[in-house]
Image (cartoon, rainbow, N blue to C red; front, side):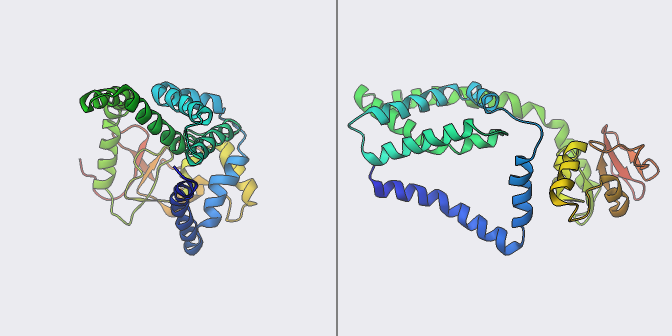
Length: 270
């Protein structure tokens, strides 16, 4: 891999980010994007330790991380590897170190070092296969074994657990129109329907106070009680919303799904 290949590698990952930036500017959404994705996380009082996030990812993708770390050491210390590939390994190592210093290390942050680390892993696997002179069926068997662990974890943790959520989503869609508003504080049924405010996924007292402090209440102070009363969404969740304090019981009835409420008008499909 030459230096030119490394530049193509960097350019291929930079182009989508550039077009996304252009979209944010042209759509007028850059302020909200910068506020919610950068300023808000910088000012968060709660911290997510990088070691804890990495531990979860490591347990789910043990073989990948071990191979990636070994590959970086192998490539950087191997004189036979060209400079371009060493550069990719160095970039992956630097991004992993930067991830370790993150104050709020969300699991998505692992995505930054993974692409260059996977390139290094792919080269190491190719190098090992060539030295071992394995046949194609043997190579496929090793790769299948390598992928079986994360796929199994994904299957066990995600597939069986969302049946009730799908029922709630189906119920909300059948009993509302595309133009109707909803409030979903726990990200459970917010699908194909507009929420009353894009801040719904941070609906807690601490985060609301921080939002108001950062924005200096411009736009107007986030008050979920006032928003619900003013905009009257068809469906609301009681997550982060005190129904009694907000005096919403006369406006909404609880559905057969606990914590999901529907506005008192119109026919409900069963």
